[in-house]
Amino acid sequence: MEPNSLNEALRKIPSVEHLLQSPAISGMADLTSRGFVVSIIQKFLGELRDSIRSGSEGVEMASDHNLLLSKLVAAIQERLRPSLRSVVNATGVIIHTNLGRAPLSSRAQKSLSALGACYTNLEYDLRAGERSHRDKILESILVELLGCEAATVVNNNAAALLLALNSLASGREVVVSRGELVEIGGSFRIPEIMARSGAILREIGTTNKTRIQDYAAAIGPQTALLLRVHQSNFRIRGFTHRPPLEEIVGVARAGGVPLLDDIGSGCLVDLRAYGISDEPVAQKSLAAGADLVCFSGDKLLGGPQAGILAGAERYIRMVRENPLMRTYRVGKLIAGALEATLAGYRNGRALEEIPVLGMISIPFDELQSRSSQFMDKLGLKLPEGATAQPARGESVVGGGSCPDFGLASPLIALRSDRVTAAQIESRLRSQEPPVIIRIEEDTVLIDLRTVFSPQEDALLQGLVDALRSG
Image (cartoon, rainbow, N blue to C red; front, side):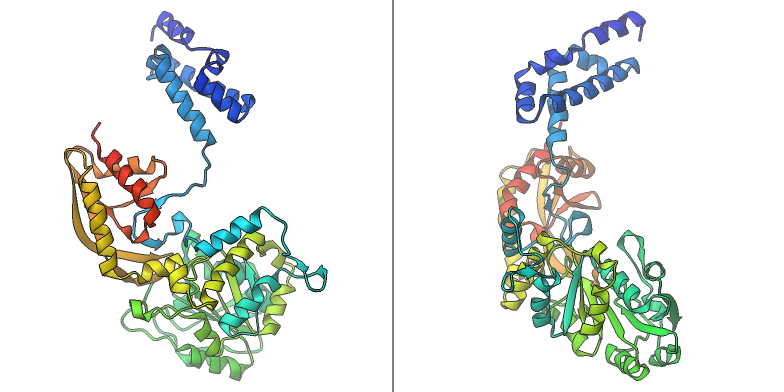
C-alpha cells in the first residue's frame, strides 16, 4: 500500500472515546467496567492497525464504521462469554471425555445449587458440635452400597491409584500382568504412575497370556501388593488368558499380600441386559475378595469427577494418613454431587435418575420415534439444497468404557449440495449453544441418544442455520 493510502486508512480508525460513545459499546461498559471494555477496544484497534499496515482486509473495516462496530461488539461479547459452556452433544458418545464425561442427575444438580451458595458441614460433626473429617460425608453411603468396611474419595481414579500404591507399596514391589500395563487418556500409563508412587513394578506373564502360576511365582519378601487393572479402553483377542479375579484373590491370601483391583469406569449396576457384559461391577469385585477397589465417579457411575477407593478399613486408613491425601481431596461441591448421585443407586432409581444409565438403557423403538418426530420438524424448515434422511448406526459408551460394544441407534443423516459437511460442523460449533456432531463419509450424522429433550429446539434451529448457503 502507498504511504498516502496507508496514512489515510489509519486516520479513518475511530478513537477509543468515539467508540465508547456508541450505545452498544457503552451498554457493555455499564454491564462490566469501563476499564475492561477500553482494554478490549485498544487491543482491537491495535490489531486493526497491524492489519492495515500488512495490506490485509483491515482497510475495508476502517472505512466501514458499521462493520468495525459489529466486529468490535462481537469481540467484546466473546470476551464476556464464559470459557466453560454447555454444549449440545449430538455425537452419540455417551461418556464423552472432551465434553465433560457424565452429565449429572437432577438430584446432583440441585445439590450443587443448594451447597454452592452456603456454608456446609463439610468438616463439622453436627451431632457432636466439633470438627470432623470430610471423608465421613461419603463413607457411610459408599460402605452401604458397596458392602465394604471403609471408603475414601479423591479427585479422580488416577489419584486413587497413585495414593493406594504410595501408601501400601512405596519402595516395595507391585505385581501386575504385562497385559494390564495400560495407557488411558492424557498419556496416563500404569508403569509411569507406579514409578511416581515410589512402588517398584514387577511385571509377570506376557502381553496376551498371564497365568495364575505367574502371580504365585512372583510373590516374595519384597512384594507389597498384587495389582489387577481393567483393560478399559481396549481388548486383546485370540490366543489369550487372564486368570479370574477369584483365583488371584486366592494367591494373594496364600502369599499374605493385599490385592488392589482397579476397575476403571465405576460400574455399580449389572448392565448385561443392555449388552454390556465385560465391565466389572465394584460390589462383585469386593465380594470376590479384593482388598481394595478403585474406580472413577464420572464415567459409568454417572457422577462428578472423582476417584473412589473402597475396601478393607486398615488399607483405607493407610491412604487417609498419607500426607499426599490432602493434595487430592475433594471439596463440598464434588462431595455433595457425588452423594446425590449415589442416593439414586441406594434408592433403586439409578436407571431413572442417572443420565448415563438412562442413555444406555433407552429402548430403540423409543429413540426411533423421537428421531422421526425431530426429522419431521426439521423437514419443514430445511433450506434449499439440504436433505435429511433416516439412517442406522451405533452410539458408543465412551470414556474408555466398553470398547467392543455399540448401541444400535437411529441416526439423522444431513447433506447439502451448497454447504460442505465440514462447513456445517464448523458453523454448529460456533453457535450458542455450540452443537457437536460427527461426520462420516462427508455426511453429518445426528444421534439424539445424547441430546437432552429440552435441547432439541436449539439443535433444530442450529441445524437450519448451519445448512443455509452463503
